[in-house]
Image (spheres, rainbow, N blue to C red):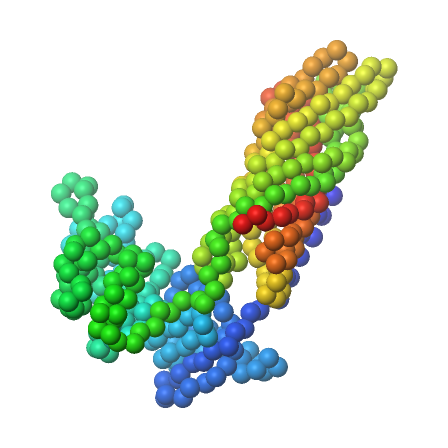
Amino acid sequence: MKKQYLLILFLLIYSISYSQITFEKGYFITTNGEKVICQIKNLDWMNSPSEFEYRLSEIDQVKKATIQTVKEFSIDNFSKYVRSYVGIDRSSNKINELSEVRSAILEEEELFLKVLIEGEASLYRYNSPDIVRFFYTINDSKIEQLIFKLYKFNTGEFNENNEYRQQLLLKLKCEKITEKDFKYLEYDEKELKKLFIKYNQCRNKDFKIMQPKEKKDLFNLTLRPRFNFSSFKLSNFGSTTGNIDYGNNQTLGFGIESEIIFGFNKNKWSLILEPTYQYFKSQKEVYNFKTSIDYKSIELPIGIRYYMFLNENSKLFLNGAYVIDFSLNSELFRGGEILDISNAYNFAFGIGYKIKDRYSVEFRMQTARNLQKDYVYYTSSYQQASMILGYTLF
């Protein structure tokens, strides 16, 4: 039965994720200079794309455009990419893969660069799974990489090539900008954007900061009361009379969920941590002796959540979590014998719905948990399904 639940949940996750397509207003410019107004599938790319999907209208066929045919594309009020043939240094920043050469090794590539600041001084970013590189141009000159490189020297030590500071010191000259602005400048998007904004403002030139109009909070704290539907079975390998089914129980529980939303892929992914109090009590009489269980614990699910936006006010979400369970003064009484209840672990999977970023409901299934894992002849199976309500404080 457990495998059937997991299979159904997996198929549901796959079908919903596959069917969810978000197209947003935008445009692209072809290599021939033609501007095409369209709807672009917004993946909020974590890594710089080399292609994208678009359609001319909601009823039109979805097509694909590539870096070979498009020199610029933009999603309204969200992001913009330009194609450029640039020199890029792909040296690794991983300590065990560092180059022993200080200077950047630039190789010419055709890339889509994300526009961060657009003005007299423009700033761009390129991401791949292994590197982040920033590029710049002044007065529409050729786009160049801002050079930063970690490299080895001596015996296993490493150092930094911070050439980007000298590059910008020579190019961004204005009375309100001093050498101090460059001395401790980090190779970081936030720091570089501040400098480019300061320069464009100093020059009294129009410029544009390319970022989504709405920036949502990236941390949520949610109160999560729940109805638990639990069952517990004890097995004794040494005696058939030791096999006891304590039946099903309906109880209440309460959790407080902390959620950190990752700032990519349109905030669809998040990390969740949810300390939760739960309990299970039951009594049975088996072969003329009494047995009971009094199980209380704090569960600590640590997992990943994926959102699927239905409209501006509502969304579905899917969870997967590793659950660490800490027993609280719990015990199992069996005919004069007291069995300890151990700390345990298992997995949890859930599907839910959230409205107005405030109210939510989730159905969650957990895999079996062995509460007698410290015993040789005893094993047990504690299973739980929950209906969870949520109220997000912020």
